[in-house]
Image (cartoon, rainbow, N blue to C red; front, side):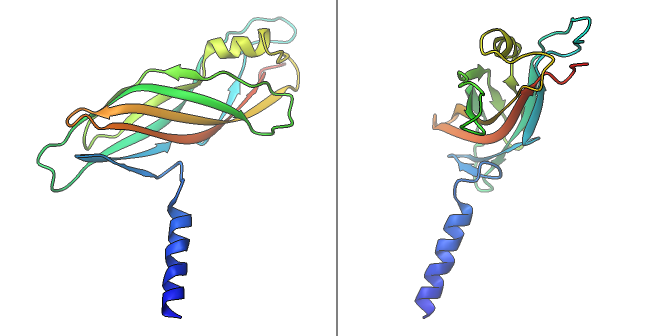
Length: 183
């Protein structure tokens, strides 16, 4: 009976601890990384400042802050920075039956995460070019109730500077595209 209880406890811990996109820890040689979005959702305005009667407006890039924290191991004599070389933004429809189109991956630049210093990446989940394409290529209608929602996977590719250990990790958020200034 004790073994069954212990086995069930391990199974529960394994289920609860796996696959969490936020709060997960990535173990490297001299540091561990944790990643968390500053917000789990972006309500993206496709055309900012437009008026349905007079026109105008601009396609403006909108971001979600993603905080990556590098924690040095207490016993490590050397604490290495981690250089992120590429950030990939992938979209999947929130409702697979919706009229929302399949969107291509977007890419953003990385940066360096220093040991003990949280680094905020303002990830361009709604870049201006994509917003323009939503209207001109994919058919999102301005001054309408069109509303397209997506799960967004943000994947970081990098390397621990000392030791050269490659690392890939991700987090998930949601984005909803609409013309929000349609008066």
